[in-house]
Image 1 (tube, rainbow, N blue to C red):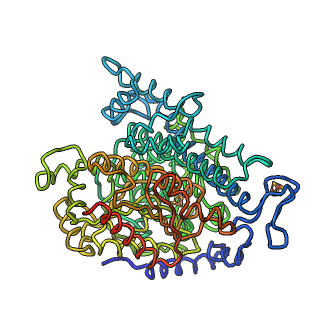
Image 2 (cartoon, rainbow, N blue to C red):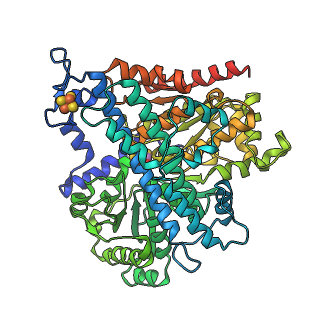
Image 3 (tube, rainbow, N blue to C red):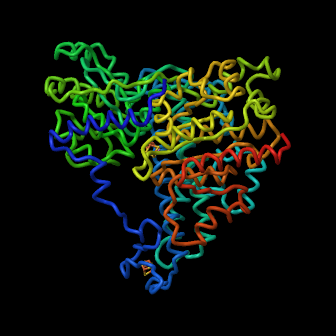
Length: 626
Ligand code: BF8
Ligand code: SF4
């Protein structure tokens, strides 16, 4: 039985009652305070990039003081938004490269997937023969770090894309150069008195996005796998019911697995367990929120407490000893909220400093020591729990997660004999698609956004698509929405059409495959690249679309841009902030198709959004004659 959105909402309502008792603020209340939003901002008609302004474009004032029109302004806004996302993902990737530089055979960080490291080294032309694996890790991490600022050439990972795709990027002048350079160029182009030509701004937005997905994010994913292991299918549970009444609950929230891996490790430390017992707890329970949750669920089966708009709920249970965060998607609201409870809000990164938090600096050089201190702080806080405020909603679902690209190929190998006689490729999947047993795939990604009823768009769309024999690959908060609903339980196969159901049975998979965090959308890029190579079709021809029905962050726009620029039509349930300019909106929703063979589609009616995706997939099939 699926958990419905209504059941989640009822659980939230009950938690908000506790919140009211202790005088806590909530995002639900703040949304009311912020509504209606400023229309100029929402539609991209406000420019704040120089102090002659801010300038707002209206029929009476069609140009800013410098003379920029609404198309230039909203194009610049869109590019800056993209740059924010690209920088954020890529900097996460850089941190991972730095962590890789510290690996030691007896250190906190080790090489857990040497095969993958060797594969990458060979791909990059690094001599591997007779080399110590740790020396190789250091060498590759240095090369990766140089990708961020190299003076010449294009990014190394681009060579993973099909030749045709690489040619399109080259032809259109959107091949990303050094990772950081595309962000800098974006900031430069959007400085007062630089670009105001929409075409140029959107082209750079695509390039800056590509620099994330085929650059910084790919570093993040690949080197996380090298250090922490490449995810393989593993069982876990999802939703607030994973918190334990009698245990110390530590919630890890944010994005960088360098931190969460260490918290998971030190929560198993005998000394910490003994400490937990000594304060009257039965043990230490770690659960996750947001992408950090995806990282540790995929590699260790750590349960997922919830996604983006559920982060306040974990504190509202009254049973959270510590919420430990690193970077991105962390509500500053957690500071004051945690003060209403016994919860320690522990910030750890210089990148994300917040008021009302306990700052315990975490760095990869002293990871073990820092992690131990964090776990200890949480455990010692158990005695401060106010029992009369504790309420853990009794909802959770089983989920099978961990479908990295490698895991998908391995799963396909097990069913290979039924379809084709080669192993280690995506060909069995291609055959499923060619025969129509599976009609196509949707990559469902991204956030929650109060502008959409939380989780409802993700879950309703998934259910609709599964019925049509469309398989889902998911990541980020979309993945958690699916897991909380029960769509990653293998029994969810019963929601599928006959074809997809048979595939799920044969391959022993859930119909919604968890591919990881948002940074891991790079895994999806590798998957489509390999599908294209194995099928002989171009990426633009594949019956595959992307969808972010509840997106909110700059990162989501950067992702959207690289997905579209890779040739995959992308469907959005929230309008990008460009509506004021029919030129920019027109480029995004149509014009860029002439460049990269795909574009955005915005549809706020979620049911229609689903229909449009199904139509798009069937149209691709028709064009292929399958
Ligand atoms: O990077 S899906 S709310 S958690 S931005 Fe954030 Fe959006 Fe969640 Fe991860 Ni992605
Ligand atoms: Fe106004 Fe032009 Fe300055 Fe923007 S750059 S704030 S439109 S004067």
